[in-house]
Length: 431
Image (cartoon, rainbow, N blue to C red; front, side):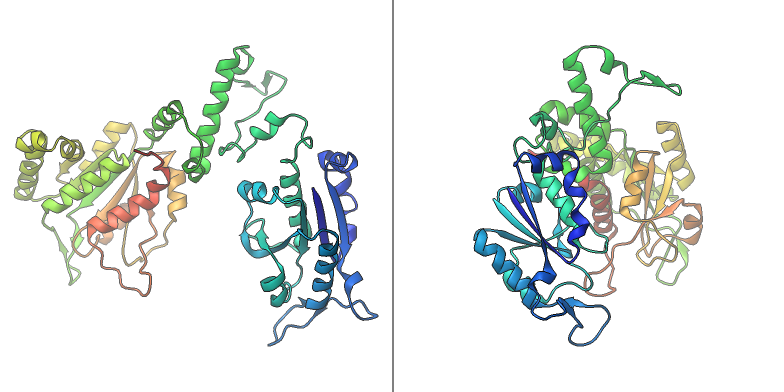
């Protein structure tokens, strides 16, 4: 594999290319790296490679002529060289991109600086644009080293043991398991007994399950494409069942159109759709808060029809969903039931289509899922009253309209969207 690096700071690479496995791979001829000074391709005596942007603005832009000349020079030596421009606007670099780039025999990395390169070069002479992350560094030099190291690890012989590469984070599709070394006990912290048991099968199982757990908690989206066994699925299910998420449908206290506090009516559609939502996403319960006894009685009759009556025989899967529904006279009694089931009080997460308080993101809420039980509170009618908001621990980012501020979703639609945003990332089961 041959790497070309085009930069205005060739001295940047004097040390990194000489140390570690990368330096050894270069010494052994497994990879070759040639650093090119962009100024060597400038066309004036001052070796100018940048100029002010057309249209004004801050910063400088790399001129097209030196870049073109450098690319042509490399292509003369290696016509099939793959040209990669390293910039914040590129596609996000990951292990799959590294594996794709490793298929090329020769790669030229253009290290961007300042405001970037002339668009005509990027549009017509660059094969691929890559970013190492959603942040900004001084230039593409550090990015080129990141990409070169990731690719080099995939080249046979660069890393001594192939299984070291195969078991790295992302190569297997999972994050790597935690590692330990001597001493067995440090400041009172002990190495897991299984790792010193000598039972290699159990050690592999422990490491596999540790990787699954870390990936599930930190990067669950990776599991969608990971190669999972039935044993893996069973283990992941046991972990997900530890997430204790409840959906509270509040019929009082809520507001009407005039902002008055009211108790809204229960609808059969809400009971059916929200319970099916809860069963699909593995919620622990769908709790309906309704102070009006006649309304609760109607809802209880509906639920009994589907859990005990003819509906239970006619549609057993609906029975499984409706069993999640419980009715309560007050919000406090619903909270007390969660505390009884889980052994601790839930975090109350309010929703509001027109946010009046600072809110947390779905990503932050997912972190809380592993810490405490969660009760997501949905308001009926025209939304929750302030006294409910005052009781809540957090406020979830609302659903925003795509083209304008219009947001008049039914509670069933809003609940489905929010639950999918929170828990959908863990839905990697397939029929």
